[in-house]
Amino acid sequence: MNAMNALQLIAQDSLRQEIPEVVVGDTVRVHVRIKEVSKDEKKGKEGVRVRIQVFEGTVIAKQHGGIAETFTVRRVSHGVGVERVFPIHSPSVVQVETIRKGRVRRGKLYYLRGRVGKAAKVRAQIR
View 1: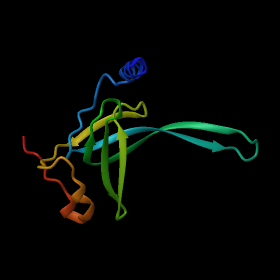
View 2: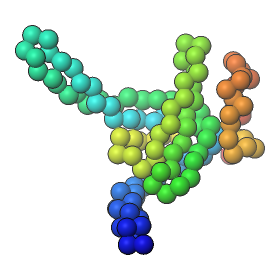
View 3: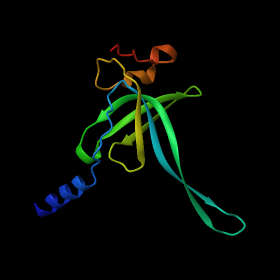
View 4: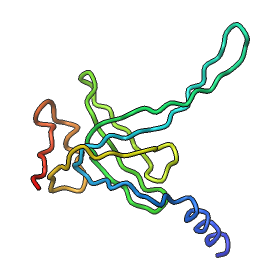
């Protein structure tokens, strides 16, 4: 039992204080910190460059579970569907911007995987 309590304490310490407001159906822009390792061929040295990559798409799923909480973002790039799963409490997720609120009646939008073009869009929520 003590080991389980210790794991819970460690998990609570690494939880993010400001949780981004992510709802299924929203169109979001996720800023992710990426490390690029480049090797200098002539000198044999490795260089690490950190940059921010932006991934924009529709939130199709949200998994709950404390520190392991994730959300899945889908977009179509050059005719190919691309999905990425982002942990909410990860330090590599710098910022999550909500571009547009979506109006959906489902908790998971996996049916969008089979849709193409305008049929794959989510209606905007009117406020």
